[in-house]
Image 1 (cartoon, helix red, strand yellow):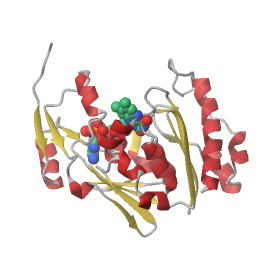
Image 2 (cartoon, rainbow, N blue to C red; image 1 turned 180 degrees about the vertical axis):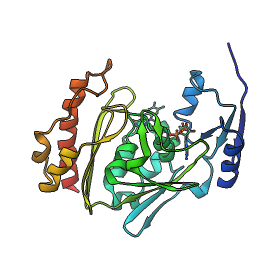
Image 3 (cartoon, helix red, strand yellow; image 1 turned 180 degrees about the horizontal axis):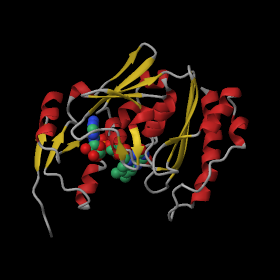
Length: 268
Ligand SMILES: Cc1cc2nc3c(=O)[nH]c(=O)nc-3n(C[C@H](O)[C@H](O)[C@H](O)COP(=O)(O)OP(=O)(O)OC[C@H]3O[C@@H](n4cnc5c(N)ncnc54)[C@H](O)[C@@H]3O)c2cc1C
């Protein structure tokens, strides 16, 4: 068996994590390890150092801040799913977190890790884009519209650490996904929200990166019902096609999941 050495440091503070990351550009931040560790086991990544931020209590919190719900980057999926504050403020977000993977993944995986990783089939990117969240790092704040830049890529620069995510409270919000039966990742997931500045629709799982559907948003601005999106489809041209489903099947699922997400939003 081929082995390779790497260093492991459990950061004691955000400042220490930032300094370590700056000193060693190829080092990797370790949060829940639910993506990074399997990737290393498969030898798809071989960072010289892991900087573990999973026990930084300053990054693990859920708090109401006026008209927003702010969640620290190392907050675990299970904590979001079971939070009475999240359930009261944005129930769709708590329900989304409760549908991620399995109990082991939910008790280790973090919201910051999921957003920084930007897996094309991950759930949280749909919520962040669908609600128009603001993502804050050790350096700056970024709108969700500018954060997700492509498959497994984000606007995060080398060594930049996501610290918290601010979700504006929506009048209504709903999420519906068609899960892959094995992993529970989204074959297609659609997050819809009726926000103060208009309707937003974000789709995960279907394409190479989470994306919005302006035609559905315009229809929902006129009439926030499932009938309004029932006749709107997205082109299959750029969608994912794999052994689980063709691009055409995923395009069909986008409309079906959007309808169900609007129905869920209207029930809250
Ligand atoms: C079996 C299985 C099923 C899953 N099912 C689902 C699912 O249904 N839906 C879903 O959405 N996800 C699913 N996941 C993924 C899971 O949600 C992971 O928790 C998530 O992708 C990564 O979060 P993490 O905290 O484990 O990050 P890690 O694995 O520790 O890190 C992932 C990446 O993000 C970087 N990173 C982590 N935190 C930060 C930060 N604060 N700032 C900057 N960079 C950071 C790391 O350097 C690394 O590159 C599944 C995973 C597994 C193993």
